[in-house]
Image 1 (cartoon, rainbow, N blue to C red):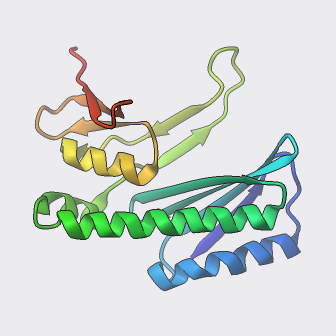
Image 2: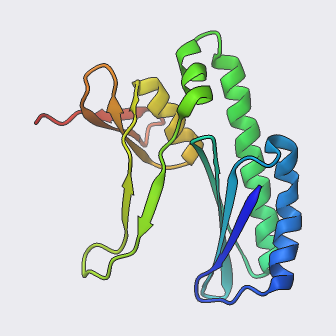
Amino acid sequence: MKITTQGNGIKIGPRLEDKIASKMAKFDKYFGDEGTLNVRIRPEGAKMVIEITMKLDGKIYRAEARDEDILTGVDKTVDKLESQIRRQKTKFLKKKKDYPGIVNYLEDDGGADFDFEDEQDDKITKRKQFALRPMTTEDAILQLEMLGHDFYVYLDSDTNSVCIIYKRNDGGYGLLEPEY
């Protein structure tokens, strides 16, 4: 796996990079040399925030943890990411019979490719651009869960319109279908 380590407000030395790379080696058993890992470390008060984003065949997995020690935080984040991967794999296997289209979609090409761009503006603090991919609502829900986000923007393959799926406080999902 290709590993990129970034420090926002902190300098990452070669020894720390090597230690982080050795901790990330456990993902080789799942994916081999395919995919990329982006490790971002930033201070937040007295703690360090460690964010790991894994991109593999168009699928995106993301986990974040806070700790006073960087390596302990990396361990926590890796554990969260590994748990998320196992949970998604289990969900896929359970739903394979119910939703064969989802499994085929995720095997072919799931997820969005993100381009991150920071802008200095009074109200907009971050911009993201990504390609919309046609998918069904079920596919969008799976992507939402894999990313661990509260909402997901996608191109609905049935209506050919841009839609937003989001998590509701009651545990269900909401769907926004704009008229234009």
